Image 1: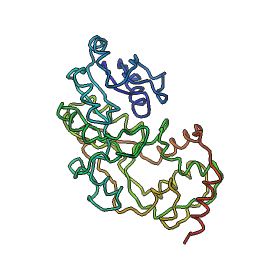
Image 2 (image 1 turned 90 degrees about the vertical axis):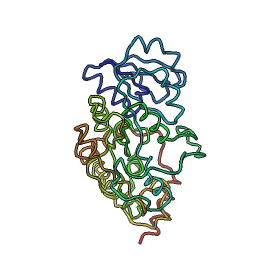
Image 3 (image 1 turned 180 degrees about the horizontal axis):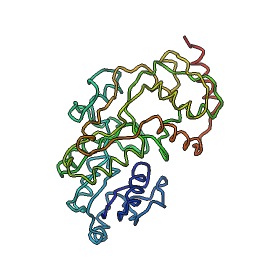
Image 4 (image 1 turned 45 degrees about the vertical axis):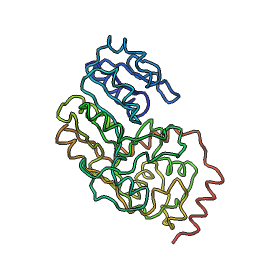
Length: 326
């Protein structure tokens, strides 16, 4: 079918576009052409800011999309800017599991929600959690709750995504461990490392997007995607080390001594364990076993390291933490 993708050239969006093209769908990708955009993603590319999509209205009408995938709506105004231009066709929207009240609990060190989280679990009462962060990729008015409200009214399928990892992950989720492997560190400081946070490999999540495109069973609903079994952060770190062929030891230190990039391994009051039963029941979707996925992701990231290097300051922070090992 003919699919219009808003975004579709970074990480998960890129994989979705590749999977759609591989099965024979015709693609039109509307995106900014930023530094992270992959120019070789299959399909026709329309370049421009999202809020200027109306400038491409004639080409979109000519393309006559049969479905839309919105990969990059971060704010309510992001949705409002494109709705007048888009046809009323089946639409899949990428959201985040940060909409749950449990995410506030994770950020604030409080247990606010029972797990596993389902699509009916309490949503955040506070809005704009990243306001004032200064993050270049997160606007002050970032709010997936605003995105969801507007798209659900239009009958879209809203896919709530977990912690996403895999090839081309620009956030490099495994990097806190892999950067120490590259530096030859043999002891890595960690805290309690007992957090259960549902993850998802980019390939599995791309399959979930295609399943939502191909079924009308979830139209107008939010659906969680993620792995079907989840290990603690400590076990995940060990899986990363094993996949990297490293015998480095994970050394327990007080949480307050942890280097900033290992803070996720501290003791957490709130878990982010998520149920994907609705995705299985409505979409017939299931992810692959996560152990092989972690190894696949690690291999890619070892072969494609970031430009940032391990520094003496990094080593000093680790050594200071390790000096307080119990």
